[in-house]
Every structure is written in structure tokens, then in C-alpha cells.
Image 1 (cartoon, helix red, strand yellow):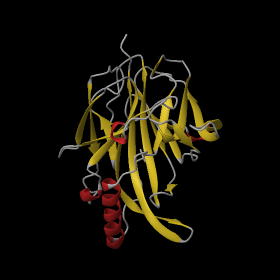
Image 2 (cartoon, rainbow, N blue to C red):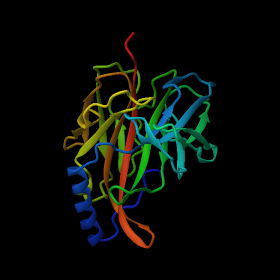
Image 3 (cartoon, helix red, strand yellow):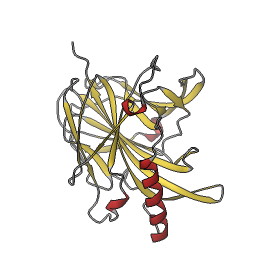
Length: 273
């Protein structure tokens, strides 16, 4: 797998700059965080049954959407944990409504599983310019499609800066506890560059009538020395877990700006009957 091979700091000076930028970003994070959203129409499917996925960019909780850039790469990892397929060419550009009703660009693809077991999808974005913070973010987004048998949901790609589930990322109910793990290569030095927090946010399919305080929109938790983090779901729906670190510099209009690499894992929680 090569999805987790993203730029890291190239120079000591660049590293110091990015550490400062990341620390400032963590201390004063915006109330309305931007995340990349990759969701299947259903969290579970049957073999031979086509499932449509949508990729969106914006504020998941507020359902305030913006134009999503064309992904650089889209792969599916099969239940055996080794076989994968490049799906980038299957992406289709579509227009949808943003939170304010204006049309925004999203991307859609369809996948038909031919075997039972859990299929893990990885979508990598290009660097996305964030005007408010004057920096770029580049994300790798992970989501699992369950196909009839529980096999492969805990796959670890074993490469690079990555998130893996320790709890099954589907078939959960409100109140259940979920654990995941943030991992990195042993040779990947600079642990201090990784933000100490995991950001957690729920996706709403439509804008809420009223917004709660920002601390009830984007939750935060720390991971332990082994990279393990824990969260109990208060309600049903799709939930995102995002980790981030400084990842070099990226040029815009002849000037270099900080680049943050982020990992987002989407997890589904069923509604109680």
C-alpha cells in the first residue's frame, strides 16, 4: 500500500516552523472544523450488491459543504489484508446542495463486492488550501464496508502514519465504547510533530435547526503512550476520528506554506430499535 506515503518535513528549519504552526493550531482550533467525508450509502452490503459512495468536503456536523477537490487516489483493500484495487478512475464528479443551498462539487463512485468480508476504502486528497489558517491540509480517509461476514475490519496497512480500529467500526450502538490506535513507522522520527489530540465529529445529513456550543460539535480526546484512544458514542450516525501532524511545506503562488497531514476514520453507529 502506498496511500500512507505523504510528505514529511524536509529540513530542520521547516520542522521547527511547522511544530510552531501545529501547536498554535491546536491551541486555537476553529469552532467549525473542515473534514473530508467519505461515506457509503449503507454500512453493510451483500456480495454482488452495488453500493454507492459519496465524497464531500466541509463541516460534517453543520452539514455546511464546499467544493470537494478531485481525489489523488482511491483504493479498496480486500478482506485478506493484502489484495487491493485502484478505484481512482471510477470517481464521478457530481453537483449537490451545500448547507446554504448553493451547488457544490462532490465525487461519487460505485463498488460491487465479489466476496464476503470487510472491505476497507482509502481516499487520498490533494493538498487543500485553508484560507483562514493560511496553510494546506492533505487527508487520507478510511471507511469500512461490511459484507456479510466479520473478517478484515481490523486490518493494519503496516505502513506510515495511520489510524486503525481496535473496536469493530460497524455494528455499534449508542453508548458503546470505541477504541482506535494511531500508529507510525519506527523509522519515522519526530513524534513531537503529531498533534496530541484526536478530533471526533458526527455527520448530519442535513443542517441542524440549532447548533450547540462548539465543544459539543467537535469533541477531542488524547491517545495514550501506545497511541490508543477511546470514545463512547452518545448517539447513532456516522462518526469521524481525525489525527494530524506537520508534514512539510507546500507552495502557493510562489510562497511556501505549512502542510498538515491528517488521517480520518469514519465509523458507523446503528440506531436503537
